[in-house]
Each structure stands twice: as C-alpha cells, then as structure tokens.
Amino acid sequence: MKILVTRTDKLGDLVLSLPVFTYLRQARPDLEIHALVAPGNEPLVENLPGLAGLWTWSVDGTEAETRQLQQRLAAEGFAAAILLQYRRELALLLKGAGIGRRYGPFSRFSSWFLLNRGSWQKRSHSDRHEMDQNLDLARRFLGAAAGGVPRPEHARVHLGAGQEDLGREFRREYQLGEDYAVFIHPGSGGSALDWPVDRFAGVANALAAQEGFHVFITGTAADARVVASLQPLLDGRIRLLVDRYNLRDFLGVLTGADYFVGPSTGPLHMAAGLGVATVGIFPPVRTMSPGRWGPRGPLAEAVTPTVDCPARRLCRGERCRHFNCLEAIYERDVLEAVLTLHCNKQAADRIAGAASEEES
Image 1 (cartoon, rainbow, N blue to C red):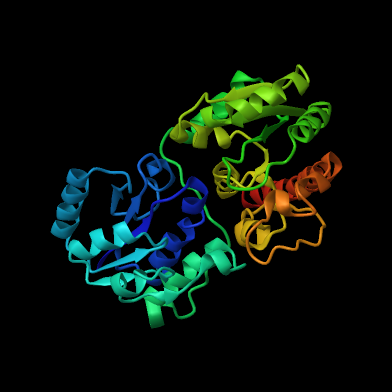
Image 2 (image 1 turned 60 degrees about the horizontal axis):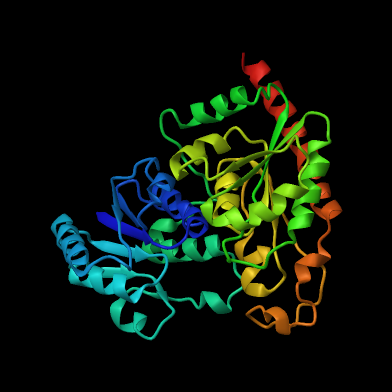
C-alpha cells in the first residue's frame, strides 16, 4: 500500500512528526511511505530509512503549481494520506488527487467534510505533547496493525553521507579536541515568549568561563536583531555562527555540539533529535508549555518559571500580572540544567565506553 504523510508547517513541528514514520514502518513494513513537507524543510526527512518519496507543497504556491502537484500525486495512486496538520487547501488538493482515505485531525469545520478517516483533535486546546498527538493519528491509520508495536519515545533526525563529517570538521576548525561545545540559540522566531537577552548573555559568559567549555551563538538572518542586542554583552571568547549555514549543513554541524540551549524553536528540537544534550526555556501557559512542546531526546530538559499562570489556554501577554513570566527564570536555573545534563552525559559516555571495551 502506498501512503502519503504530510506535515507542511515549521521545522520544530516537522521534527516532532518524525516518530510517525518510524512507528508506521515498524508496524507495517509493507507500506510504501512518502512524505510531503514545506519547501526548504526537505533535509529533515530526506534521509529517513525506507522513505520511498519526498514531495513539497506550500500554501503560497501558485495555482499552476498546485494543479501540477495534484496531477502528479494522482498519477502515483496513493491509497491513503495522513495529514498530521490540517490545512483546508491541502486537504482539497489531496481529495482532488483521488486519495480515497484521508486521515487527520477534526480541528476545523471544513475538516469534517474533507477528511473521511479523521480523529477528534483540538490541539490549540490540548496540553498533550505534539509528538503524542501525531502518533495518535498514525495509530488511527494502523488500527489493529499497531498491536503491541511500541511507540517511539522521541524523534530521531537521520543524516546523509557527509553530513556528520561537517560536525567533525567544525570541531577541528575550532580546535575543540575533547572539550565541550555549547550552542546557544537566543531567537524564538515568535513561537513563544522571549527570555531576556542579558540572561542569555549571562549563561553564555558563565559557561565560557568553565574550563573545557566553548560557547557558540547560533541563529538565522531572522535572529539578527536579537543577536545584535546580545553581542555587546558577550565574553570575547564566545563565537558567533549566525546565518553561516543552510539547514542541511547546520544539521551536520549540530552533531559537533555537546549541548544546546534555546527557547521553544525548531533548532532546539533538531538538536534533541540528533542526540545533543538539550535545555529548552519555556513559558508555563498550557499551549506553550514543555508538556505540549518540550524537547524529547535521550538527554533533554526543560526549564519553566514557577508561577501560577492564570491563562486557561492562550498566553495573555502584557495583560497578565506575571508578564513577562520568563523573567522568573534566572541564569542559575539554566546553568544548573546544563551542568546536570553534563553529569548525566558523562555517566552515559562512561557506560557506553565500558560496553564498547567489553565487546572488543
């Protein structure tokens, strides 16, 4: 059976969708699985094991592009599609392509007409983790075939030939040797409340002062304003990597990092999915909290302020008596999380080293 799995929004959302592909492949090895993602996000899925095809679609595409994609999808003869995020325009396209079984969340009025195998999900009202809700939709498709197949515990980003070499080259370039590389990503892209820039600087400077730690500030061109505010506050030993790499290369360079610190944003989830020890900074409001969007990886922690959030669903912003509640997170809170992960990572490395010696 040939199926199409779609996720066409942001990078972090796509990372938290990756376990769906693992789950489907384990439960139904006979499936021919294709992915459809937003243009530019291909590096996150192009190396998934067993992926049979990769397609792109944007809601901003022209009418001619949409019509051409619909014709190409129709020619493929997909038996089913799983929309991990509902978009009316995409659902119309897939229906027009003749895909008979269309799974996804019943989250909009039109979804009740355009999906015929949907599941009730109102994610903007839910505090369940995004990854779990994605897996629920896959479970709906699998039905009895899911059986006793275990759900993945976290996302895993797969890299292609040569990408991990970029991580090694990065470490050679900065002569890191056995020292530790810490990536700090201060930009949130507007997806959550912002932690004060001076506190990011405080964490960066404190870690740079630790023996054996090297700190790098990461970001894209969209983060230039935040980084410009941060730069005058930084210790001279800290390096900037802002807008230096495209997505494919940045994924490779990330494998050269030991720790990643940032807000709720795509690179945070990418780092966790690559096995980098990750600390995320999150507000407490339900739809932005770590319970809903926290990083999931073998070594991942979330820091959130201990305030009694009055919001029932959405952050009240400046109308809230606690605004900006992230100011209740101090440098010491994030440093403690990083250093705790450091101890855990060292212990895990010792265990892995001992096991390797026994095998040899």
